[in-house]
Length: 138
Image (cartoon, rainbow, N blue to C red):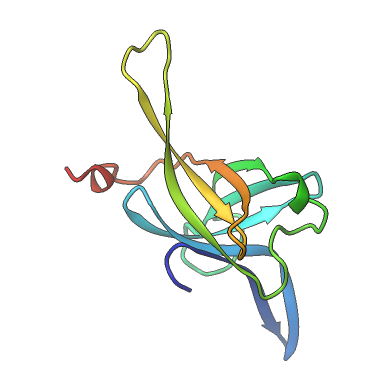
């Protein structure tokens, strides 16, 4: 899986082919290559998990790093990506201003797109253990 990609996870268990109910991704987030999973529920909420224990399986040890609503046209299937579809994921920055704090604040978020380049979801991320200096060049 290449950096900046997002795809439907395919499993082979006991010689049987099975399409998983979640997707996997690999992206550079805040200067660090991060692998993880996405899971979409029936109401169109996309949850993004970092593969914290690096076992390649979505389980309780993996940390939730963000959630967002999936665009309406991608909600009905239970997964924003179809079988064998590859999408892209890219970290972007959002600038916000607060009255109490005069300097603009930068917040990272992830853009998930399908294979046609259509925006599926924008997920604000909260990750506690990354080194911000890599992304700013310090």
